[in-house]
Amino acid sequence: MKRQDDRRGDWQPTWRKPVGILALMLAMAIYIVVVVTLIEPISRWPVLLQVPVYLVVGVAWLLPLKRFLIWMETGRFSPPE
Image 1 (cartoon, rainbow, N blue to C red):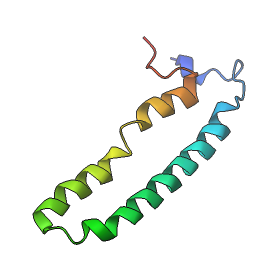
Image 2: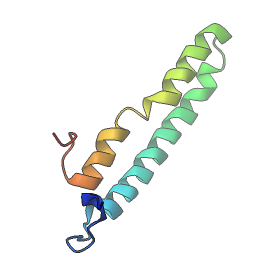
Image 3: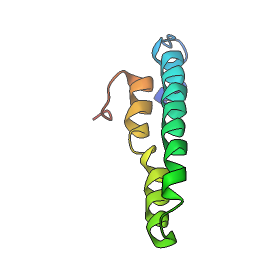
């Protein structure tokens, strides 16, 4: 049984994947620079305040990732229906 994904005849390269990878790397670099600049002031806070901040900062970059990867694959920002 052959899946639809296995068809290779209609595959066409798109500009979205290389541009998306470059944009993702640039966005991650900017995010890292912003977070690293915030570390020094946050490190002076009590540990019980630092933990939630680091949890949020550590997970926040994942939130837009799903829609961005969908766009790279399909050209739309929402999942296919």
